[in-house]
Image (cartoon, rainbow, N blue to C red; front, side):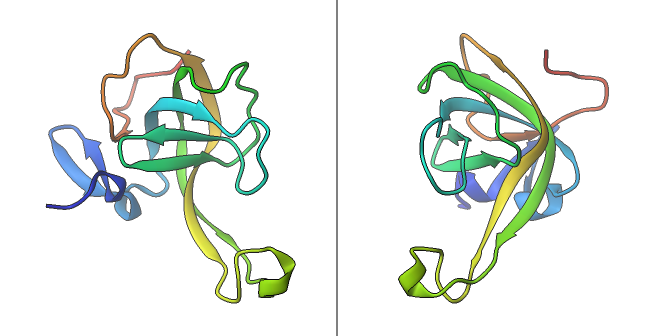
Length: 122
């Protein structure tokens, strides 16, 4: 069975994150990354992580959060191993751009969700 990190929920179906690129998505999970180097702010889901393309300001790490926006596949360019970067191959990763977020009391899905038209985050 495919792992959570490669699938998103679209209605009653599951699709790969690759097929969801360019679509509006919602991620609910644990807010993290406030003061860390690397790819930045992120939402920890069940078994994987989704990054936020633009910096967001989570007041506190570890709180449950809902982030909505457009799913993108981004790339960190290659860097020499001695630079402390991501090495000679670079790194591809998924991120949410145009992010809107809010704290939530509970998570309704442990997976990335492709948003139906008409629903919004506050």
